[in-house]
Amino acid sequence: MKLATAAEMLELDRTAIERFGIPGIVLMENAGRGTVDCMIREFGTVEGRLVPVFVGPGNNGGDGLVIARRLHELGGLPFVVYLVEPSALKGDAAVNREIVRRLDLPRRIAANEENLNDAAAEILRLNTIHPVLTLVDALFGTGLQRPLAGLFLSAVNLINRLRGQMNRPVTAVDIPSGLDADTGMPLGGCVRADVTVTYGLAKPGQFMHGGGPSGRLHVVDIGIPRQAVDQAGLAGAALDASILEHLSSRGTASHKGDYGHLLILAGSTGKTGAAILSSLGALRIGAGLVTLCVPADLNTVFESSLFEAMTVPLPNSVSCLSFADLDLVRDRLRGKNAVVVGPGLGTAPQTRQLVQRLYREVEVPMVVDADALNVLALDPDSLANPAAERLLTPHPGEMARLTGKKAGEIQQDRVAATVGFSAAVNGAAGKITLILKGAGTLICDPDRSWAVNTTGNPGMAAGGMGDVLAGLLGGLLAQGYPAATAARLGVYLHGLAADRLAQKIPYGYTASEVAAILPEMIRTAPVDSPQPSMRSNP
Image 1 (cartoon, rainbow, N blue to C red):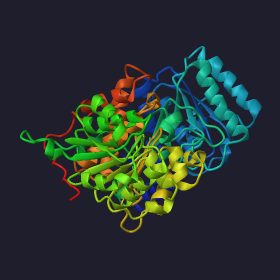
Image 2: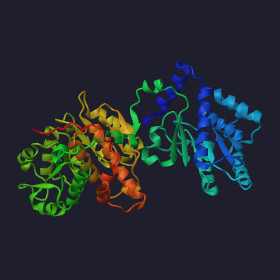
Image 3: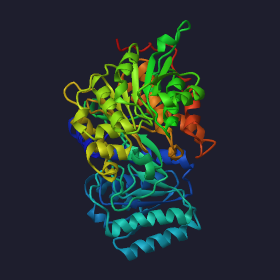
Image 4: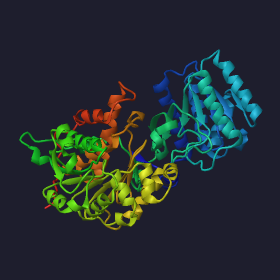
């Protein structure tokens, strides 16, 4: 699903109107009518039901007036609350204001705090006679750039208060008022919507931080030509089930050698579980073979805990992996199709040297996770120009160390942080794909195209989830998937497995349980998809 930033959406609207000759009033009509259709699907018939519509000063308010008109046509009882003097509305919004006036729909002008409170009291009174179906937030759309204050912030707070007081849902028009369309951060305050009906294309902010205030999202076609969208050069997308079309099928006579051999360098004293979970992730996603390079003194832990993976005890590595075993690691890289480095690795000096050398020199795709990222963050310049594809998987704290920023800064604008980092570390022949983990995990390719994940839930806030993901990604790379495809498939399937568990257990499930049901998530692989090409280190 393509995403459009606020600026991109503004340009698409302009293109539809100016280049293709579609009047803005038509786009507004389609938006309002489409919203009412979604409301009916969500909440049932509007007939005889009160629907307060809070109208702001711009085109979002105009959309709200179309909604009020359409509700009236269908037998609903719209109650329009203007947050500005109606005469202040301009353009297409003013046209719809005049229609609403001539229809003599019930309305209140809340141009100050006292009027706003009076309107709220009237809504509560009417609710005892005609129960509210939904509150409609048509205050501000995607063009809002400055923090809400004064009367508009009071209106947002009032909508949220009425939502709780009456236990009725809120429908947001295009985007919850106060939500930054690009970053998903509130601008001073934000309406808490149960349903958002967005126009033309979904917006990045509706998926950042897990979707937060947007609730259930509907995307309505308002008539922007497909040609305009195709030519807009949109870089962003939201991952949905269509990504599963990239899963490859398996031939009846295939064998383990057809599905790649993954080498994992992970684990140290006290962190052996991270390496085991990474191996589980790789095996459960279908890697043909998995080998673990581990400190020699910890080898018995791995051999007794994970029967399906092979181990390579590194004789010069005690408690943690050591640069002294570089030659043996190089030898074991022969014939491998991908590498995972980092889970539970630690950051001892001898481990740092090994990670830095492997990152630069290994000529097969590599997942760089956890402590390996912390090692590379000590010398950010070393990130550029690796020998082959690299898939980096930082959480916001690790991303902060990689970029020299604070985690809070990263979270304020996750897209900008991800795309900016990608631009900094990828040259003309970029080889680094970035996965910024978190609610609404982001994937950014070397060419700066990006995607936000739509699966996952708060139950994943538990130890070991990232280790499973690292192994899962490595398993996909080993099977021959390109880094960009592996990143999207891996992140989506990881979250999908957790969502399946969360249907029965909201939280308290474990990372190994997520790994265990990954095979169930890949049952939808198409039967006729080609097998990805294999790569190996000579």
